[in-house]
Image 1 (cartoon, rainbow, N blue to C red):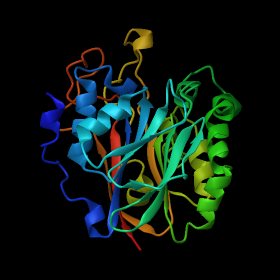
Image 2: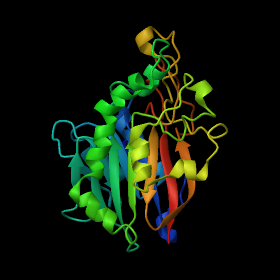
Image 3: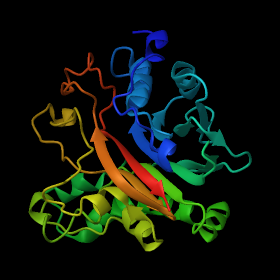
Length: 311
């Protein structure tokens, strides 16, 4: 499939909420920029067009990939990348107007203000937190017997990264005006939610209740986890985003189950109300690793998108 075909795709979700006093946002880990499936970058663009969002948070972005994607998506799509030329890793795509001199870059992500063509302005962050010392691996390791062992990786990587973002002076200015201009924090946190690892669910999480710091710190700053606001029942609506294709861990020759969890999030704060949120992996069931190369959906994460109304 060529990018000329992509430009004439009919969206699977054709009604953009920005046309109805609202906004549709998406987070999409693009799995090494589509390198793991055939024609991966074309498929990334295809699925963005299928969802038809106003703003997309991208993770695992290689150099020059956003240039290719905006060409395939067509006018008026533009990109903002984290300030790292060799491996930006995180980026934001939008078909609206990026406000100059509002870019923020940290070790964990990139943020910018965007003016929608309807006149509304939002602050938007794309995050990709540290992948090392993945907490659920420790929690499901039968040799771990103290919560401090699970939290060690969080306190080295993901916890400090979320605090770095929250302590950015420009973000603090955004927060001071959040009653008028909402802020979205979206991305792959490489860690679960404290709202999901509770007494009620600990039997499926290695018998642990864990205060995962990245989501907890955002909650303490007044940000709302969109998925859990709409689907508060963790048992009936787990919202798993990891993984579409990684079900048995390849590091153990596919003999050990890969923990399945919700690690991709859409948080918001300010004058918007969410009314729909979905996880997404295309219309064709992705084939598991190691049979994934011909998959139509190019990622090992579910994408997540949500619609909000401005109030």
